[in-house]
Image 1 (tube, rainbow, N blue to C red):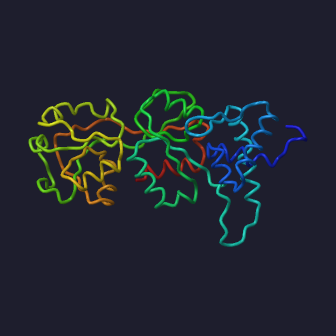
Image 2: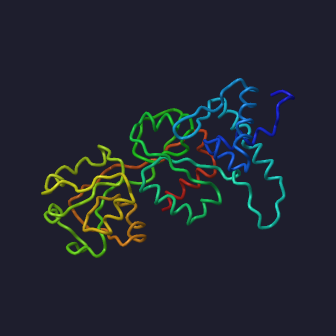
Image 3: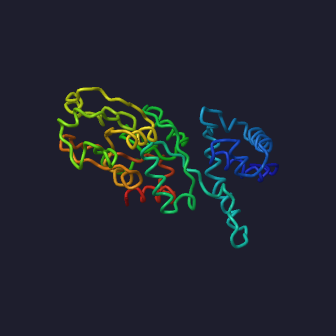
Length: 299
């Protein structure tokens, strides 16, 4: 870096990497989008590198941009920590890191609920959830490039750039509305075979549905609804006489938050299947990442 470098550009690069968007960076910095574009233009010229490449989800930092971010981010934080603010004032938003998470919709709800209750959001970070993908290649590549900070899901192939942490066992249970006219606290396979039910509210994975063939074959009618929309399924269970296979780990929160109940059944087989949190090895020692993982393990 030579003497002609404009050190005011540091905050622009950091904000764009944090938000993965030039528009959001302008909002975070409370400046005009044109100012962000101008700053990026100067940075690109100085480093002779595009730094940010447009993608479907915003902009993707190049390798050089990520290397610069690792250098600039601590400097940027240090500068703002030295600024004395009046009591009751709020620190600039971009001091609070944006954590981009990829997982299914049920984990999104559960994690957001507990992160807010424990003041991780917004005191320590901001959550942004990316669209879930069942493609292992896409999941791995987005972690390698640090486009995604944390991926929570079923197991992925080992990668030297990615570290994994086992979180919880993924067994299934049944839920229905609390005032279901025919179902009390337990249900038999025979009764289940005659009831309508709702498919899972997460990406169907071969490992998740394996061992369920006998249960599904016992049914008289096929599922009425198959959806990845958590809200759609939950609201239809509340409004109608529907059953739903649901991850047992999340059942306590769902039955507390909604007029739903867990139904005991002995025909769902237990699985040795775990959900993991994946992140780039460079991010593993960050305190906010540890706080998020500790929260999940604690609950």
